[in-house]
Length: 272
Image (tube, rainbow, N blue to C red; front, side, top):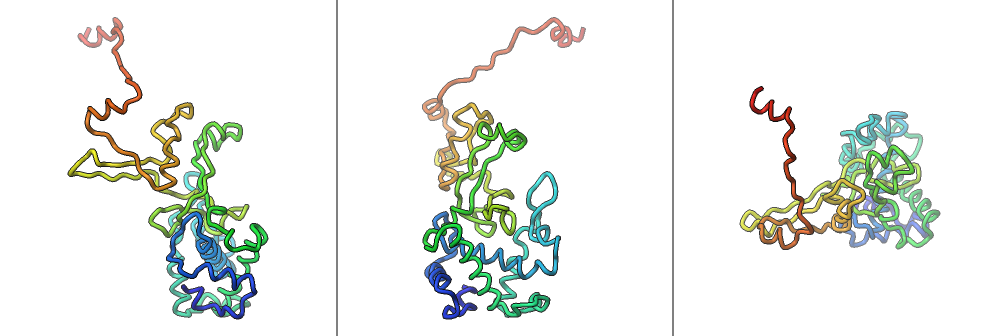
């Protein structure tokens, strides 16, 4: 909405004027098929870079959420400045822009950023804005520690990449490093929904769940990744509580039997 309010469509290039029409009727849904989401998110990232890059220099990425630690790829600054940026644009607060050589207004910066993004997208995906879907830039890979440590083991332990909707601002959190990666994409490497569950306390058999990948930790099991499709589509799997249904749908039985105790164990048990 800010883009539509601030930018003078008549001043846009023909392709940018065509692309801005993708926002008509858009309700902010970050679906995989959305081209408006692509235009919004890339314009936002370019705005952040232009407005803050000159002030922060090498600290820009860290301020926008990129972590330098080994345990996490994003820090707690992720997306924190976005509401402030949007508020400044809405109120025509040019505090950040006085340090820029040009442009000096948000309207000018928005237009320049949008034109830049349109140019970049047309070079990558062609001159038809309908082809600039979010799924071509935003994806997730389920990585196993062994799959990240050894390239040859990635196909065995990792799953993906998969196109995915959402971003760091949606209820379905799909956080990526600000400004994207070296390939111009926005891989979900920060955080995502790891587990979904709905419990009906009035009828436990009407409860549903879905972990991100599967129930097994073994890549050789069919249950290692058999729930990924459900998870990607925001679907759920029934939870079973009643023994009869558990038996009905069970694939097998794991029977754990005690071994014969050793003499040492017997001695310890009787206190000898």
